[in-house]
Length: 483
Image 1 (cartoon, rainbow, N blue to C red):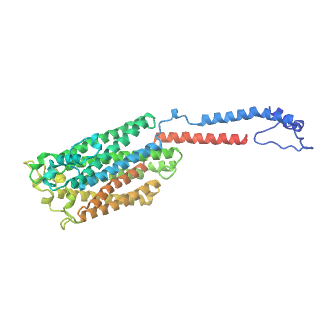
Image 2: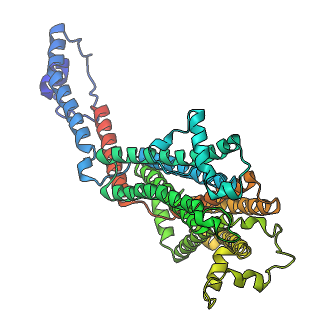
């Protein structure tokens, strides 16, 4: 074919006997006379002869592109970035529910709705008659009879809307989570194991709603009217369980969503925790970094436990005793007979003295929360300081060091919020900010843990496949350009 092209383009080349005609370089012969301009008939013959070559070349390049694309059927399912963003938005909804729930407790609004209607309760009362009917139901509760007997309909509407908003956010979370989960599952955007894990979180959302109503029932019990010295409020045990489950939901959504986003970016050629993958994996395998990771896990658990102890403080109004810091009544530790008062024991042999004071005595509950909060702060300080030491600093991923600094900054803010809430007798804005701060500190520690994990298997395989695709595409484009 090349001989025909040469003769069609310039018969002079054939006369010189040039037999080497390379795609990469064509030797320029020294011609004794210029190549004559080809006649129109010869030019048409040249173009006709070149068409099969161009057609076969483009077909070859297209075939190369098709074969260089990684077959998705041969790779594990890698959740796209949209799944991670959906989980992050869901965790944000949980965060809002926790904060609004805290405000509901602080304003003593949690017992204003006396029925649990998951479907019909979406709408608030729409007429004056409906409002009067709801108010009459509230008047039968121990809280109204013992504390709010002078409340008006206007007062009732305020506390009703606080509790209604809290429940509405919970319903919105269920719809916003279950709907996309079904969609991603049917479209095979997530693996079977991820679907099972996220389905478990969806089940916990339903359990959280049931647990919330179980908590409210404890404050509507008519037996409170007959118990001497009783205060009509929800059980602090059920309140702590309700908050604990919410924090577990938040941690599951936040960490899973963040991990999916990091894996997706890594599979597209991005860095891992701020450094190249080889350096990051070598660093994570070092004993010092493994020890740091174990300490970070322990600190995350301590943050979670401190937040739970805060639920007991809120449930018993323990923030209204000893409004000073760091002392309690002029002493670091209150008297032993006050911390472990015999009056809280219910068994005749006083065998329940210790644990009942720990969970039911407001003085002991506040002291425990102080100890846990101080321990959390000091532990965060020490872990941050260890991440700044040269021996560990060089081994930790850059993003881990940044995340640890953010966690320590949040611990400082949370400490100041807690002290201010105590000194100013638990004002609603400060107390709500303090509860939000506990979730933000938990988020910061979860971020530290995410930066200390390795890329998932699916992310690694997709990264290698896409890198091979890119190299093949680049080679095919170079071949086409040379042609």
